[in-house]
Length: 258
Image 1: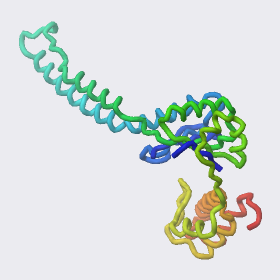
Image 2: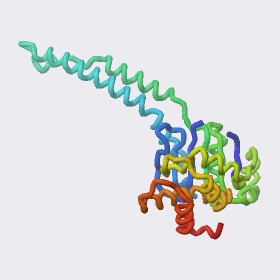
Image 3: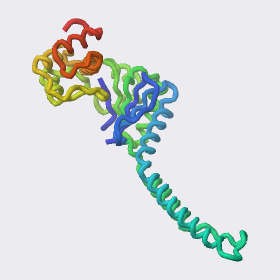
Image 4: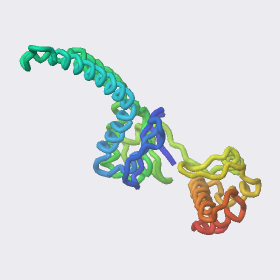
């Protein structure tokens, strides 16, 4: 279930875990794995600064390289002057003003870079206290980013108790289980959860059928099954996903009969 204020670069904020990590090489999505119930705004701003720093890194690396080239060239010039006969320390030449002018130019370029965060996703929003929700509302009111709240069924009823917050919600959408055709499409296109590597061979039809039956269209359960399949393959030094592997993966998870 999620409720949205509007709808791309984005922040994904998960209130369960406790570390910040980059998910992709490009800053399309940055995970801030812990949103405290007291410092909600501070946590979000910290993550936005993280995204901004990723965007600015190429410009900063370029500035460092250019400024270093100017510094080395100027140092060589000054050394040549100081090495001339009769030159005293009092005659030390001034630093080339080009260095400072170039530095200021790059500072102007940095300040001109717009905030790349245009969408903020807040997972498990149903667990946030009103104080945190108010801070999130304040961020939305600034108009710099869209906001999506994700939570368990009933989150919209809880938020409805706060009219000032609820009045800003654009729409509510409930995620439903995937149907068999959707799961089949995912598996036939060799989709796998982030960090999970499965054999390159196309999954056998009977394996796909088993995964559809066991997952029941539950995306989280499908993710857990595929993750466990990778582990079963690794432990047993296998290179092909078979029904036996799928059964072993299911047996190691508490998911009930399927």
